[in-house]
Each structure stands twice: as C-alpha cells, then as structure tokens.
Amino acid sequence: MLAADKLQLQSTLKQQATALKEKEFNLHHNNFMTVGTQAAVLAGLDVTMFIEFQPPPNSEWQFVIIPRTLKFVYYVCITSAFCANIL
Image (tube, rainbow, N blue to C red):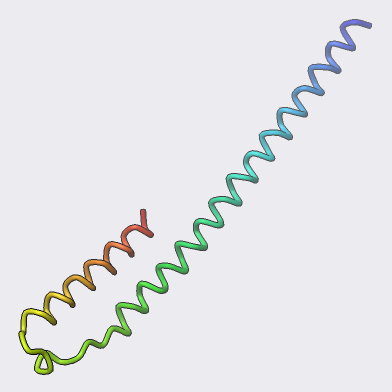
C-alpha cells in the first residue's frame, strides 16, 4: 500500500512539474510574440522614414554643410534604430 501511494505521489508531482513547465513555456512564448510584433511595427516605421524623408534642396540653405550634416545625422539615427530592432 505504501509503495502504491508513493508511486501515485511521484506521478502527481511529475504531472504538476510538467504543467508548471508548460505554463512557463507559454509565458515565454507570449513574451517573444509581443516583442516580435513591436519590432516588426518599428521596422516598418523605420523603412517608411527612409522612404518619406524629403529635405529641402541644398540651394535653399545658406551654408551647404548644414543640410548635409542634418541628412547624415538623420540617416545615422534611422539606421541605428533599425539595427536596434534587429538585435
């Protein structure tokens, strides 16, 4: 009788451990799905920012270095944001 109770207790513990591992797996799966969705949305916004950026022509600026610097900083920021989504 004691052996049967011991086996039943062991099987119950194994079932509970398996159920706990399943809950943990589902939690991690849901978290990764959420992060993946957010990364996809941000990547789409980054690509849109690459396409839609229309700065004024260089002739409208007093100094030529200003628009070039602004474009450089803008594209560096967008590229770093895009790379941060990949990581």
